Length: 301
Image 1 (spheres, one colour):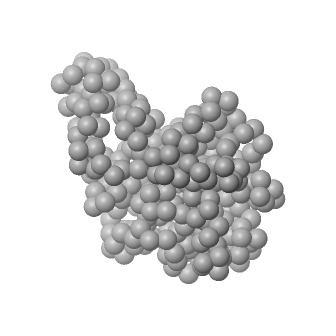
Image 2: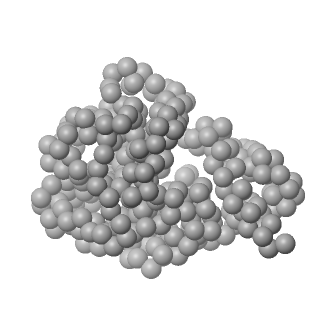
């Protein structure tokens, strides 16, 4: 079952933010952790939800960046400045990217773009949300475990959606946090987005498929529980195969990366006009994916 309403997922686990861009709060015996960083404009929603749900903000000791794309790191600067002692975790590659001036400019530009699309740009005049060079943190790698007391967060490296992408798994509550390295439960479909390298994205899905999952915690469009949660990664694997075939056909018919990407997103927005990403950003995503697919296809000929 897919749930897009914010609130308690189960004891010790909350879904916060908004349906199109959420974060999760894990409550351990020795403190709480926010997993993923959402989009910047959800900060006022989070502050209101802390009050509404009785969440003690002072108990938040850690934040985990699952990958460094703009729509997954938006709240990090605000909370790090608000609570300087919070420990921020991310992959080595994520921290490399988040130190690059070009990456920071892109994060800030795209964040405002989507905030404007969602009618939320005014939050930038009320809160200090932009990334600068004052945020740093700790590196986590494959197999690392972060102990919150009664809950242990295990790190899995799954580059493919992005070169810096990691997933988190909490065995005590059978909760998987795959970020966009898994499938996005949009509407009644599953969006697959292997932006950086679609082949490695598919390999990452294969790594996740044998985990026992009762709570599938996506960054976009809520979480999945029950029988569907356990089947979600296998279903995503099948959807990724279909997506790859669509991209291969689009490139085969055009022999042009840009034309193939435009063909793909035109079809997508005809069916899904309310998707949170603006068409220009999603076009860039598809250019990246088609470029990889084209390279693989050309190598085989």
